[in-house]
Length: 433
Image 1 (cartoon, helix red, strand yellow):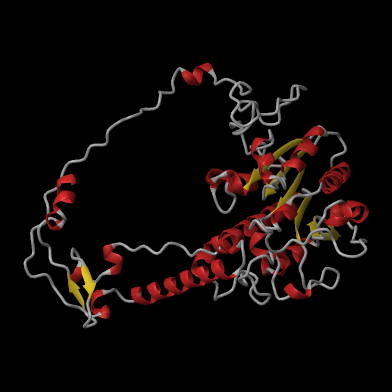
Image 2 (tube, rainbow, N blue to C red; image 1 turned 30 degrees about the horizontal axis):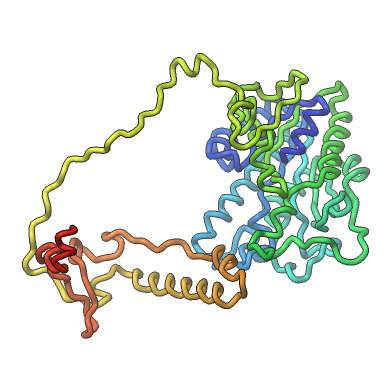
């Protein structure tokens, strides 16, 4: 999305952009900022709104079926660790629908970009036709019917991409002439495409991540659509555009980290452009001077901190020793409770969760040992979430405060608390301690 922001600003337009990856304060999934955006649309602050909600949870790159065609909001049998991930993307889709409805009510043109469905005739991908797209969600279908929206389907290979990647644009009715004229190119490639947006390369890197980057001609087409539509509605020159969505990263990750566009996505009011060589430049400001490229580790090219900030900001405290008040040791219990069976010792469900975690670890180890030279890299991406429980979560109240070990009789016996373990060590080790 950053390249589209740059193109629009170079054409003289005012751009306000918010990105779900900007951090918690810039999240648009139900926070105060989301309400401010909708209120600004109602007040007519923007002349055009462009939306591109996250598409990763809809992508066919996951081994798990996160969104079956019958359950586009997320499958019922999705593992718990994926539920929040899908829910976060669902909240962002809800926000985008809310924005589009606000635009429709205010008479402001809007446009939504997202990958096309794999089960449509024009964009069919049989191997993934059972996966749902954002266009299959009920709230998005209702939005399209309510607004009478115009749409266009295109293939990004027709705009210079190495991937075919079918994309759909959905927008206000006033966008139809621009979409028909500029955004309806389909694939004309002969034979296979250079790259396929699925799987991983020999180094374990995702092959789908670079496909998220718009090729430059595609960004140009989107900028043209926005300009063409705004000329119909606001023929007075520069316009104000609001963009919200998922940051388009460069295919070269190192280029993203050093580019002056990092942090260029702007929210309301002045803010620091973290990662820029000019962090205090006002949003949208341009003095005609090309900012210097910031090289990693070079402090000489960065804008100095403001004097009024340095005069009030305290220096960080270093080498401060953390002190705590000692606590008295617990009273010695001569006759600890037990022995216990597994069910008597552990809270309900703990044993089953531990067994499940162990099977996941075994599965990862098999993948690492049986997938060739780079199997460990593939296994690394499938490591289960660490399994750690507090004493209160793991043990029943009667066993709190004690250590237990399972013996040959199958019961968990308390480990007696005797003298320090140092007394049982070899004399030389004891002296070393």
